[in-house]
Length: 141
Image 1 (cartoon, rainbow, N blue to C red):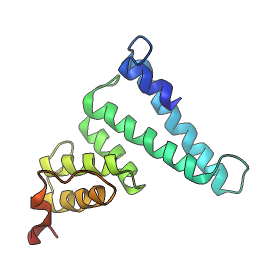
Image 2 (cartoon, one colour):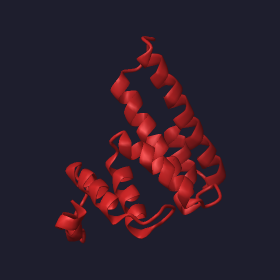
Image 3 (cartoon, one colour):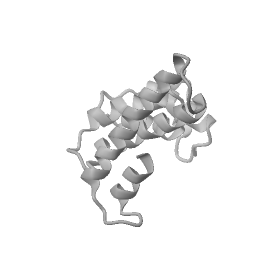
């Protein structure tokens, strides 16, 4: 569902259809949450880490859809909420995008101190710190 949603959203190997792609991404996130709950409650199935990474990616991609208006009405506030969930679950891309939103007041109140914290988390996971020297200043620690 996740990969099919992404393929539709971007037109990878198929006709581009952002609305249908968004629906598949939402389904992927919903199913991943359900599967994750089954694993947590002792049910049989896929390994926990596989489910968690699928869930995080699906949540992040739904946030991307809201941020850019891909297949859904553009809503940066909603995007920030999805980025926050994925960032808290450890996704480096979501951490960087959440930091960008916080640093620039996109969909949320501008908060450069919190932005710096999320950028530092993203950098620990391999995101580039080019142009982000400001996050290491004492006032953002």
